[in-house]
Amino acid sequence: MTGELLRHQVLAALAQHRIATTSQLHQMLRPNGTRQVISRVLVRLRVEGFIDFMVLPSASLARPRAWHLTEQGGRLVRDLPVLRGRQPYTIASTAAASLKTPHTLAVVRTHLTFSAEARRHGHEHGPWDWTPEVSHSIGEGDRLVADAVMHYTLIEDTQRRKLRAFVEVDRTTMSSERLATKLIDYARLYHYDGQPMGRRRAPASSGPGWLRWYPVFPRVLFVLTGAPRTRLTSRVSDLQEMVAQHPLVASLGRAVPLGAAILEDLEEHGPASNVWAPLNGGCPRSWAAL
Image (cartoon, rainbow, N blue to C red; front, side, top):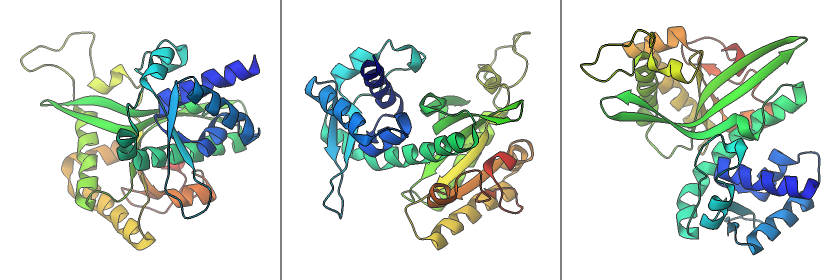
């Protein structure tokens, strides 16, 4: 029964997170178990045709594998309750996987820093509390696609504090200015009422459109990697400048916590450490204290 449960969890994790290495699946699903248990399940699922892998480039002799669902695997997991009606993400070829793998794995790395933090402190945050590529309309035919939406429950004594965050993972593959304009999209989502042009607001639909999905607008977290620290800190400064100079973003910053951190700092110190730079100014702090 335990083996069958793990098999379903591996399939669901790949459906949810899209691509993950053997090591990442081990940390995600069985952090206190042995890696061999995960490896055996992965090999069996591949033999059955439900998953496949690509070999990642590596300077060491070990050649890490990045796993993903096949189309056959996608059909198998489509009705899993844990996916909450989301369509499973499948990849038809290794070539298609290679285009998405570096960014997707960086997003999974970010998730794992929060799940490790939750285990250390007795909080609640697991594989299904991290939803990649969440899309929302922001008007005029445009859409905002967040790299992930995170749900996290802080537990302190008998108090439970539910936090949500939009997470943007930047591997320094786009210009700093283009990265900063993502803040404009979040500001547009914050102010967007979701009503079609020319239609009166329904009496029951008071408030902005995002209230359909979130009781409180999620904080916005930028996680940076893929460049020397000096370049990454410059990108953080550009994000802060956007908050200071753009009126719509400044309005967002007054109402919503905004922060940026370096991924390697999250992995070394944990997201609860004072490694987050508030985008509206101030001293570094934990993500929950932004």
